[in-house]
Length: 424
Image (cartoon, rainbow, N blue to C red; front, top):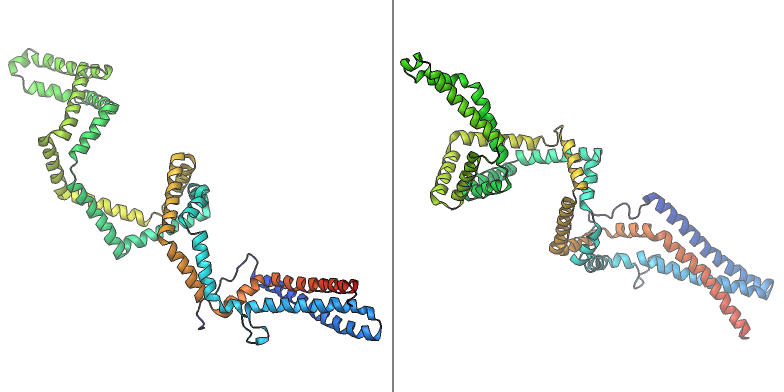
């Protein structure tokens, strides 16, 4: 197979690779040493049977069975990764020869047991995305990285041709939508809601207060206007001063009454006028057409266009400097606090995250498992063999040790059975 420039990750387990390699080498030496010791013990015990005493047959039985068990397990372990002694024995070098099938089997296993919408949804039942986001925002180090990443991303988005085109289309689309949408009914419904909730009354209070302050500050102007419009004969009799006093006093008394009496008839007339305006904005064609005409004239005004353009430029500048703003840290802290304290917001975020993940699995699950399969198939044969062997070799050497010792024990048991039955 061609050597593609793809390898397994350097760490299959949490232990460093050099530690795993050292442990595997040590256990391999122990298992091989025990196998050699059994071979020597078999030869020595066979010689001792004839030269010293026939009872050394027990030692020979143990050593012989242990040698057979150790050799069998050595063959089995070696055959997983390569051909024992380089011999072309069938069904050896299983992992290298089955790499593609392993990739397909792994992908199928992932698809059928993990990457299904039902399994993913069940797994995400306890997933708290809101708390995870809040934790990221609360960490100073990660928060700085997030801010720098956001700043860089926004800068690239705004300054790139594609990003500029997207933002320009967003601006033009917003203005076009505003131009085409009839705003009069919306204004009428909004005004109707304001009146129903009584939110217009503080505005009336502010207007009454402003009128009273204006009357006090401009009283001299009112008196001057009365004097200018009064003939010289009336001024000679001080009629202009009495008229001005009555006018200013009457206005001041009216404003004081309006401020003190929430049920004043003038206030009630204002409520009725606003209610009529809300109705007209929603249902009267003449009023709706007049509002639309004012809207179009306003949007066509060059001054308004210049103001919108300046606001858009300031928005783009703010996006470029979003991550560098001194207040970004405070914004992040406020967002984290909101995510932790607002149960409704946290619930909405968590539901959105779960739906997004489950939807991704539903729409792209096949692509994910295909990626796993193709990645495994693309790994270099020698590399995957070495990495897998390094990861599990230590445990496999225990199989060799157990096979040697258990084989010897079984050999002793069989020899004892033969002795008991008189066959030996």
